[in-house]
Structures are given as C-alpha cells and as structure tokens.
Image (cartoon, rainbow, N blue to C red):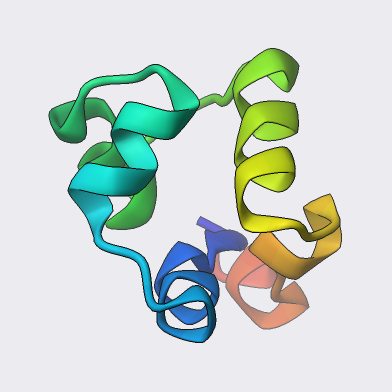
Length: 73
C-alpha cells in the first residue's frame, strides 16, 4: 500500500498509549490497531479529524504516500 499511517510516531511524541488514544478518539483499540498496523483499507474523515484533534496534529503528520510502493502495485 503506497499510503502509510504513522500513528506510532505521534503516540510517542505525545507519550500516549494506544488504549488512551482509542478511548479519547471514540474507537475500539482493535480498530485503532488495524489502522496503526497498515491493514486498514479506508479511514473516515471524522476518525481522521478526531485523531488530529486528540494528537494535536495535521493529517499530513499521520499519513504518508510512498511513490515507490505505488509503482510496485
């Protein structure tokens, strides 16, 4: 997948656990793990907005596009 989710980086910067983030965002830890581990096929804008609000960041801080991964698909 050419788009990766870097939630781990923001969690480390904010010294926050996955469980705490899931609770504050309003999603299950299992669904957050799917997103965090790159297994998600989609993310709702409302979820992305909640992640950004809780982590005090921009969507670009969480999502990255790797053109080399796109070329291999």
